[in-house]
Image 1: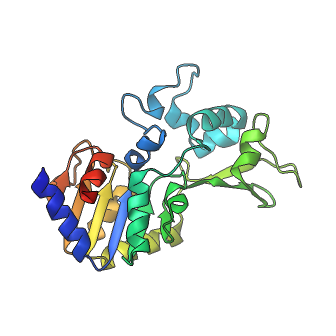
Image 2: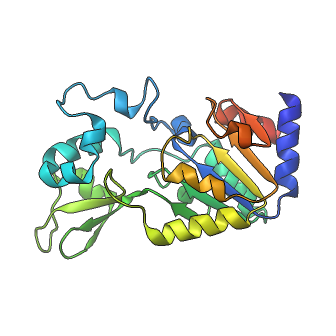
Length: 243
């Protein structure tokens, strides 16, 4: 694998514009489970008669907010999670002068806490919450400290996380920025994602640059389109890039 690490380092060193497209696998080393693996979020909900996919839908949120928030607080919010070596590596690239745009399917905010300035969050952010009536903003602590489903302290309406639930569309402005970034970059690094979630995964088809690279433990349906594929732990790859 030494040659693969050297090839990746050369690609990154010579890149003019890098887009880093990330998924749940990049945050697993920070203690946040992914969704679909054997230890993922979707495998551990035996105490409910509803499947996790049902619970994180917009219709379920509206019909059963207490049940939604029970699952959401226990399984999807990790307020103590810290940016790991992979998040920090891409933030450091930016600090060193590289033009880096992060596009993430994650909702944990760890790219920003690591230091990346331009982050397009396809599925929202757990740290942003709003009143469904008056649109008042609330931070994550307000949601976590509420008993059951949180309600607005001004008008009393239900508070909703600013995350994209099943049955909801992606933000059109974020879609446009994502497509533009992917179309104009010369290097697209796909990190820690199985590329099974659409429409997010479909955005890769807009790439017209020089190098498409996938770094993911498992193979993906896009691997045959790539210039370089590393089916390895993301931390291991980054550690080898630093040596």
